[in-house]
Amino acid sequence: NAGVTQTPKFQVLKTGQSMTLQCAQDMNHEYMSWYRQDPGMGLRLIHYSVGAGITDQGEVPNGYNVSRSTTEDFPLRLLSAAPSQTSVYFCASSPGLAGEGRRDEQYFGPGTRLTVT
Amino acid sequence: AQKVTQAQTEISVVEKEDVTLDCVYETRDTTYYLFWYKQPPSGELVFLIRRNSFDEQNEISGRYSWNFQKSTSSFNFTITASQVVDSAVYFCALTPYSGAGSYQLTFGKGTKLSVIP
Image (cartoon, rainbow over the protein chains, first blue to last red):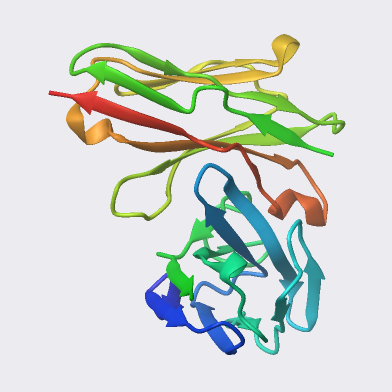
């Protein structure tokens, strides 16, 4: 299993540009989520999904969109990037009732470092 | 609302010293999970331990030990005989035990540990 993969690893955007951060998992996990990590702030939840077709907002959802059309993929879209979105983004997944691994453990991807100028 | 406080922003110790990282949490849930994650300089998040709220036994894993005290809402992490490879940022996190919220981690802001040779 590849686990949780994220692309790209690094990205530089200009203010106002749009882009999609990709996240995929091959463990049949029900639950997927996106966090952002800012210096001195820990990780904060942006959006999450409890299954294909179901998404909801976390603590800091403004400026981001998500969709979950398949179990495997959970892309994060920035519609109009702002310097305040400069951060490291982590995707995570968790088995739920049917997936591989411990039900109550979150598996994190390697992160995407995004800079918005 | 849930909250995790890691009051120690940065700690420096000399190699072979013992060090304790503090974690205090707030939650209205009667059952919950507590976690510790390690983030080395390479940036990935490494799962260290999960503890559920109805199991107050302390745990030891090699040089690592965890002290969970429900009465003081604390889940402290001790590294014995620290090594340079322990240098990292350590995060404490909390989720409810069940429901959709059980997949949403609330993180502390992290403690940066530097082990000096």
